[in-house]
Image (cartoon, rainbow, N blue to C red):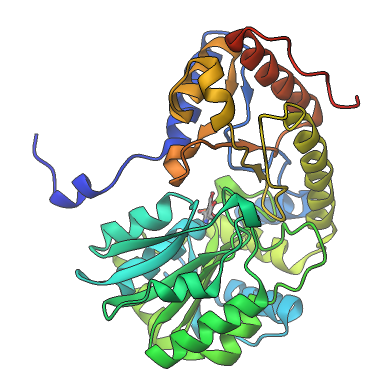
Length: 403
Ligand SMILES: Cc1ncc(COP(=O)(O)O)c(C=O)c1O
């Protein structure tokens, strides 16, 4: 069969591959500890579900404007005003099927063949894949665990060429949980403004930051380059709403009009019931967000201790999102495995623990472990990982870390 050439440019999602393999085992009755999932284990808050029930009862089940109902766009503006002190107008908001569609619209609206788009690795794989689908070329700037995967302005700016169209920054980042500093963003924004580049901030995990560090990225971008800033985010992670599919982009009105035209032909409006639920999420009580974040922090601290109990495994403590990204290159050789892909495959087959190998994030030697699951399952997963490494390398497993 012959398919369009663009399909040769992209690779299937590594995360979805792991989920499918874990699911196959589960259906055979195997007790799989799934640390592969990129989604909250919490249920959607009750008041959000109630708003969806009400929408159904009121027959709010018809098409809406492709860019979303005015009340939701207003609620998104209000949220950013409350959280960041930044003013957006409803015509600058596009409601999308998750953060993913916000980013994809942005890629198709802004990037052409021949354009280069800079982003940082380890990355969420859809970012460079979407750039490629738009016909442009991703230019990857590596970050390093030695300085906690910090995004350095000079490294990003050193990658700029006459072909550069945009810079995509993801903070907190998936998979490393790194944050860009306000200073680094300000430097990037000033230079981007000078050179006429776009800056796209993927803030999908913006509500999941564990320490009270300054992270007002919308303010910095809005102040320095309002005409070429796009912010993409979603209700998915903050409100445990991954399946509802609600995200948004915030950008100049002319850009948003282009997104509206594109989405109007591709998928039209986000599910009408979801939109009502998202209004409740954004305008209702926010204590659920804090409760979930505090629980993720507790899990992060615990699982980080457990995983790094083996001194051969090193791991930066993530500052946001809900993933650990341990470096296991030093145990690979001992376990007779040659890559983290092989490691993840064997771990799933032999110890029934699903993790995502680093290769998919452009970070061989690492794997991603999601701690958006219960403390008991995390403990079981960490135990199994250590037992697997010990069994494979013929050593006793490290003493459990203080528990
Ligand atoms: C960095 C990042 N951006 C965007 C998304 C998109 O999220 P969604 O489309 O589920 O809202 C994800 C999802 O995992 C992500 O990790």
